[in-house]
Length: 361
Length: 164
Image (cartoon, rainbow over all chains, first blue to last red):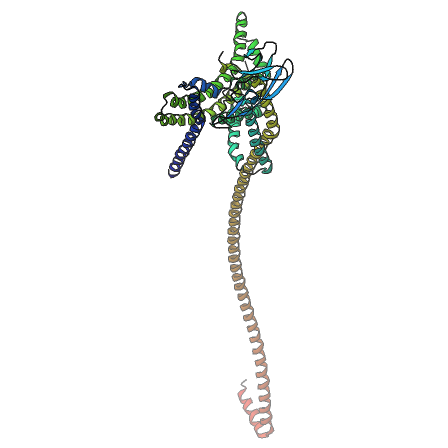
């Protein structure tokens, strides 16, 4: 009884500390805007209306600048694959606010809605003669590579400690991550996939930790975190397409037979069956894509909306309420970060399991 | 269309590249050794547990065997002791009997010997007495016969005694 009491109090302490920490960070996050707003008002001499939608969309969207806070932003490399050739320059070429037109090697470029477009003239009319495929290192791409490097550092060091400590009990980071790895193996892969689970473990572990670390990086409210990578539809799309491919490329003859030759269904219904089944093949990864995207984006939007309340009401009095809710949401988002990584991995293994299951009709 | 739900193709490409890179590096240099190490350790723990179980069974078997051996040894010892006791008693009684018999025989022999010796001694005594008597008689006779008168007297006396 004593022990559980201590554990409880420690949990409470942890959450309080975490809460205070996150509160301070949340203040830091909006500090930039707080400073920016008066500046703008001074410039325009009129009360510029605070637009929460724009602020939130900027925060959860992608950008060619990496904002640190306090009006400081790192320029990021712009890589354009145009029909005339490859263009590489820094986004600072668009000016501090990204308003200027950059004269590249092959064409003029400007940022329109934070997207690089080829423009003709100085009035930012889109030049249709130049097709631009934007492969820039945007904020999300930078964050993506950061997470990749973090994952590599973490798991290569863990792997090396496994090599160093053969047959011994895990230690340090290794002992922290081993239960998670075992959880993915014993509670996600094995029950859903069955005895052939070992082949899919690398994919499931990579997907799980990739989503988890990006969810967590997204929760860090200051540089270099705060990017909404797993809440970006492009990222979740790639992940779900990987699931789609892995599931269907590994589908055994029972899986395909079930789709194309459903034994018990009358033959005249087969075309309809095919439509439904083919729809099912795509709808399941599609649901994965939307679920992860929506959950993470929603979390970011809620936190940002709560912070925006302070600026909407233009009152410091609202701040404690706002911050209290933000702390609550941040803690909830910690849970969601874990949960969504788990659900994505679980459903992926479930789909793989149904595709490689040995049916006995 | 809302920019939120419009996948940015550049990010799609980068995500694919980054994820593929991450996957292949981790699969080769992290997951493979980690899963192998965990598997090996689990196998060794399993083996150790089985061994411990086997050792326990072996131990129990040995204890059981020991117990039965002890029991058997005890029974054997008891058997041996009781046998020895019996043998001892038998021997004692045999010895007693033998001694008794021997004693009796020796007593008998002694008696016979004694009787024999007695007889021999008696015979000897008799001989001695006879010899002595003869010698005495001789001496007496010699004494008597030294004197004529006395010889006559004796003859007359002897004659008197002879009654026809």
